[in-house]
Length: 386
Image 1 (spheres, helix red, strand yellow):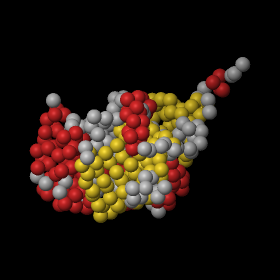
Image 2: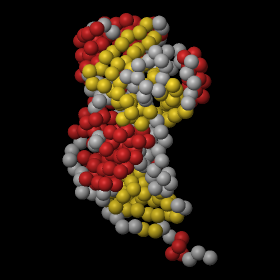
Image 3: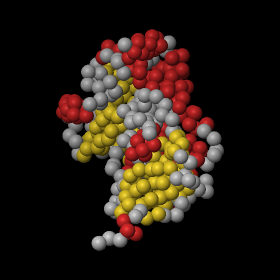
Image 4: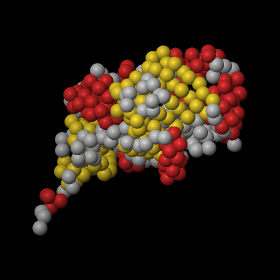
């Protein structure tokens, strides 16, 4: 029979900051906080550092955020976009190339950087709950079937769109949409430095894409609104284009509808959210690496008492992407055809010069060069409101 001591939670020494989840944003925040002189633990429920692979596309801004070690995650560079809809097409040449990265490589590099900065990484450790104490927070976890109780001044929820930390601290759940992606052989007619985008509003209010990983392989994907229906439509799209999947990738992606406040006070402690847990995703393109890093940096600065200017900048950025998505979300085929027709040389030049992570500047430059887009966008906004 077990004695009472073996039944009680094991209490460890106080940790200044506990990060729940070894996501890209969580590891980025952990490294920054650790470099700022705070004790940090990163808790990951998986038994080993084995993140699921997924091919992603990011802007050149990504290089400003990472160290040289994390550049090993870069697979390819994209120098132009080809946009297709209803027999029409437009090409945009990028002044600074977009980057194709591999998510699992990136997370492994970030984990090494966080450990090197002094953060302690603990795997097979599942977050259960949190509660206030006299000095901060109790963090209840399960490690290998054993209940443990950690102590922290701050807890960072970096555990994805279905964040258990957010739920425990009282945040409402975030909306998500399905992403389905297949790795295929790169078609012979597609240069390896060119991304293709297809607008098919009868299938999805978002778009289909093809992003080359190399001269041999590309990732083809779609964002939908309903999981099973999205997969069926995607299968039909792959068959129509003659793509044969070599492997599958997928995820639930958070949808940014409004700014999620990233900090809450629980008792005498502070709880923060970063990355997908706070829906820090560009809803126009559903990309979240660069914005997730911005959110992580903002939260780290707040913990280190360095101000919140990064979070204010991020809020404006995400708000602009929300406005763009709201205008596009009810577009019909004729609207996309008109949009492509309006992309004159000057407008395409703006799209190529200013990246998607400077959305406000990009939006105003595009409107200045093609004022007719204002009327098209307003029509989309009114349709979305109705």
